[in-house]
Amino acid sequence: MNNYAIEIKGLTKTYGSHKAIDNMSLSLEPNKIYGLLGRNGAGKTTLLNILTGRLFADAGKGNVKVFGSPVYENVDILKQICYVEEKGFYSGVLKVSDILSVVRGLYPTWDMEYEKRLLLLFELDTRKQYRQLSRGMESSLGLVIGLASRAPLTIFDEPSLGLDAVIRERFYSEIIEDFTENPRTVIISTHLIDEVNSLFEEVVIVNDGKLLLKADCAELKSKGFYLSGREEAVRKAAEGAVVLSEERFGGSLTLSVYSEKEIAPTEGAEVQPMSLQKLFVELINPMIHEQLVKGGIVK
Amino acid sequence: MRIKPLMKYNLITARFAVIVFYSCFMVGTVISNVTIAATSPSTPHNTVSIVGFLFFVVVYNLTAPQKSSRMLIARSASRKEIFVSQILFMLPLSAFMAVLQIITLYAAGLLGSTLSRTEWTGLRFDLQTAIAPDMDNVLVFFAVSFSVFVCFSAIGYFVGACISRWKWITYSVLIVGSLVFFSCLLIPDFFTAVWEAIKFMLFDDDTAWFIVLKQLALAVPFVLAAFPIIRRITAVSSSTGSN
Image (cartoon, rainbow over all chains, first blue to last red; front, top):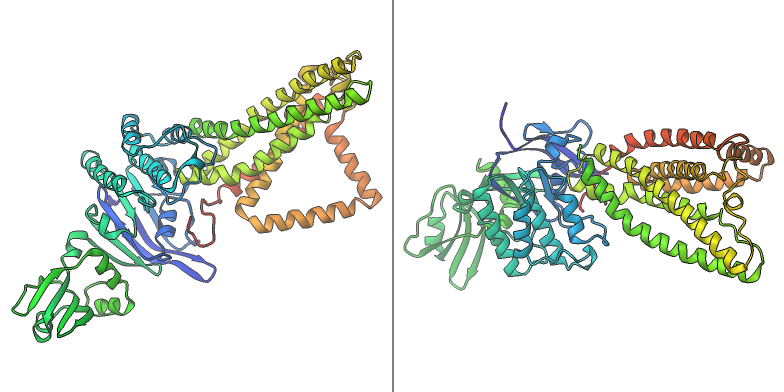
């Protein structure tokens, strides 16, 4: 028996003729922070919905296990999953205190003291009704629920929507601090890649319903480079690497490259690391992806 | 099963709806009684009040599987837990509404007779004695109201579950079915058969306890039929899979 937190085999989900998830297989180890990246409509939310038992895969197409067991109607597993979605389904008339009083009863691992601390940290007024909350406050409530639940699998889908920079920074610090003391499997789906990527241990990139890449975040970031300088020197330095894009500024050339090996600066060619967001944008380009597949760099 | 927090959620969501409904209902009852008392010397009868309560329990249970279930599935509750908590919640809600109905009848009857300066004919007149001979007993009256509320709650819940699972199909079936049903009422034999069925369910010549039994017996198949439907509802509102 393996000890994956999440194990997905051959998962497919279709809406009419559109395949939201296409024969996806993926395994995630426990007690790591994963970044789930993908464009809008790539299948991230559908994947998360199926993982958490909110949505069903196509009949007979896919096997999804969380902590070694199927999720559907499995209370023992469900109580270990806390999925903080972009938008809650809470009734607008409920007060924040009402919502928390119900939710804390659903997770056996809930930490009441931590909840109180988080409410102060995220400046959330528990007397307010849900409909009175701003978009940022709704997100803050989600953060309190996700963090205080201490659920062994905690999923945040766009956790920082509407949050100001101060609260976002507090969240990033808090998740790292709490993760160090209470390790658990955390999945963060976000479009704010550069802002959040310091949290990720691994990244999972999905595109058009397929798994594009699952890699160690630091390792992946170490493979993206900008080479700039004289054309001949730059092209020479880029030999053996996959060129993702190129731009010319006057007489100089800048190449974005993906290289399995580290590229050292040479005379006439400067080397700069590429941000994860830029690398992500390049990697989801179908032509680039094809090159990487042909080169055996990704599956 | 995590029934306690789910029942708590049901209670919290129902609390607000009950307060709003009952406030409006009470104000409406008082106004109508004052109006009747001012224009007529007789004591107002409030037996019709059950319709308002029925409307409330049906609407509440219609919306419960649609709104609450989604939120609870999203918070990692299983569909079985949600189903059990929602069915269990029908019982205290129906009992509470039956108590409120009796309070309304007493209060409105007293108010009406005071305003019209007539002798209050008492509960025996207001308490739907037509449907069974022992309906002037408050306990029997409570049991009948309770069973009718449970029965209509179950029907409402079943329809709500169908709407959650197959929204437009259910709406279409309800609209077409209603049109066909009301058209068929024009056929005398059909009308008679429907009336006989209603009489069988809601009237009894001997004792109202049979009415209670019949109502509860009718509720059971609707509850059982709703279970497999609830087990397949999703927490995703649109066909694109996003929230």
